[in-house]
Image 1: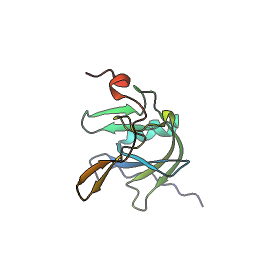
Image 2: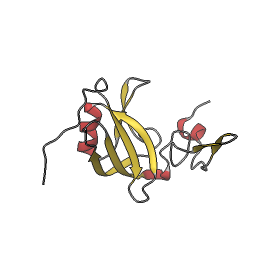
Image 3: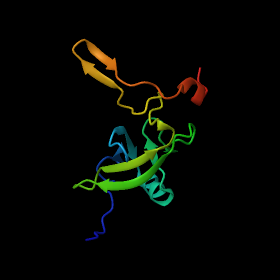
Image 4: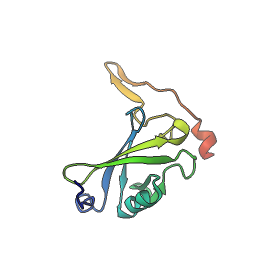
Length: 129
């Protein structure tokens, strides 16, 4: 059964959280936010677009790095205020720090441990520093 539902952008000041998951492996890659414009661009291009809360601007994931997210499936939660994007992560890296997933730190008894291996050098990709 098809329902006519759209995300509810009214609860977080015009934003909805977007959980991003690798379509093939199920690994959680990142969490970002979308405004209505990012949502519409994602739907029309089938590549992930987000809203940067810190920069207060729209951004196309991979626009600088080339590590775009090709959207394969979109799910909406029961309250219609959070989306789950299942994506093909081009370049094998979702994190701007060079890791496959933004969740590359795990809390252990003695503190945070890095549990991933960088896929690329962010200094080189983003020409920082």
